[in-house]
Length: 321
Image 1 (cartoon, one colour):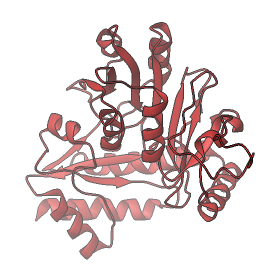
Image 2 (cartoon, helix red, strand yellow):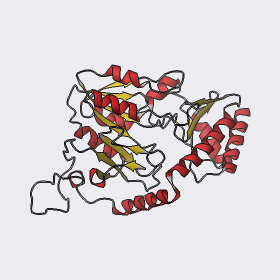
Image 3 (cartoon, one colour):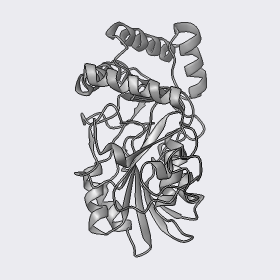
Image 4 (cartoon, one colour):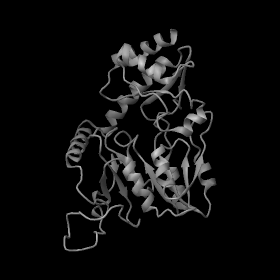
């Protein structure tokens, strides 16, 4: 699933929490440059902006909505401190080649931070092979754990500086907070109930197999995409030519506000979707959907082909009205 030593992993309350700590671990100072794809989740950018970083966004290709990794390398200067990438877009489902970006980061001696919120639990990640210095993830998405859980991997050699101190539960008579991982970054009482739930979810994933989950989710996603992409008035966003993508489909119907479409899907057909901006303002600006937003279907292996067919017909009827 994710290849790393347990001693290099700490648990957090969310991926946002982990990203905030990653900005501190990168030792960001005023004026440092941080390179990010333009589809970056808003909390990812905010964590580094709050530390005084100057963000250099790499634009998507207008034809595929993908990121050209060579443009990331071209953006690097002597002031670049880190490359921070969201592994998979939560709006289009497009994914970036983090192995290629990791090689670029290593070549130029800059830190490489990956937000795997959309992919952890669905796609395999090898932090050593992919040259990832810090990996952040949430527990409540594809890892299928409770809300309020998350974590991060920190490569050996990255200087660890606590965001909080005290209450580690170890080395009580030492007035200084422990410097060893993961205790160094786990001050205070952890969310024990949530962690227990996350552990149970991971056991479940191991039992049924991540490859099996991914294959089923992508199959349902593709069935839905192929069912709606030819409906007049429906515009789908993302690159569906590649097999390496998150199991989501975002679209709009004509000029209808995405919230109105989502409300209709739920109230009439009992289908829950996510409308709006999806915390991806730069992507919506690039797509021309800043005001309209988009309707997002996210597929799980719990869904069935019958549910997908029902969703296709619901979209078809809404587009005809």
